[in-house]
Every structure is written in C-alpha cells, then in structure tokens.
Amino acid sequence: MVYVLTPLLVLQLLAWGVETIGSASVIIYPNPNNGSFYVSTSGLADFSLSLYSIDGRTVMERIAIKEENQLIHLEKIESGVYIARINHGKFSKTIRLVVN
Image (cartoon, rainbow, N blue to C red; front, side, top):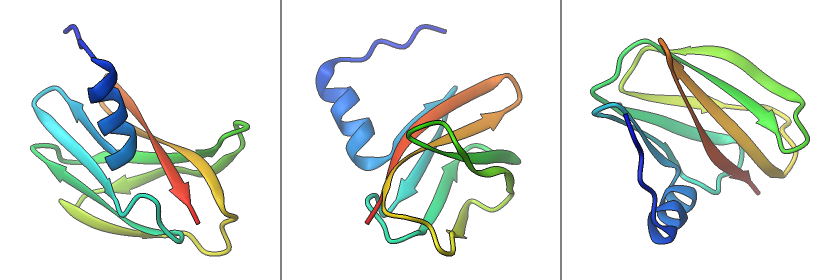
C-alpha cells in the first residue's frame, strides 16, 4: 500500500489526530487536551495504543482498545507534545498528541 501525503493533508492529520490504517480510521480527540482524550475507531477492532514523550520516554504502553470510542485518562501527565502509536497486526501508525 502506498500513502501519498500532500502538505495540506499532513497538516490536517497532525491538527486533528486522524490517521487511517487500511480502510479504517483512528481519531484521537480532543487534541490538544488536558490528559483525558477519546480514541475513536471506524472499521478497526482490538488494537493497542502506546504513548511516548517527545524525547522517547514511554508514558503508557500497549493499552488495549476494544471499544469504538474509548476514553483514556492519564493522571499526573505533564503538559507537552506526545506521540501516540496505534498498533493493529502488522500496521503501526503514529499521531502527534498535545497535552495542555
């Protein structure tokens, strides 16, 4: 599979936290947030979410996402930019996540 990203599409993906895996989509909202956010999926079941700080530290690892619209609440998380990694089988995607 080949992904063709235009600068506008990349900007939209980063701003909204939307990513596609095959024919499925994963949305993280709100983005930015205060440490509580939803992971919403369409056409995707049973995947995991890991969260890393911008300097590579693991904040949360392999949280199972089984619902189409699941709330994630991170207690005592510092403000900053994080990288959310979504894993499903052989697919892996990253989404930039901002915590205020």
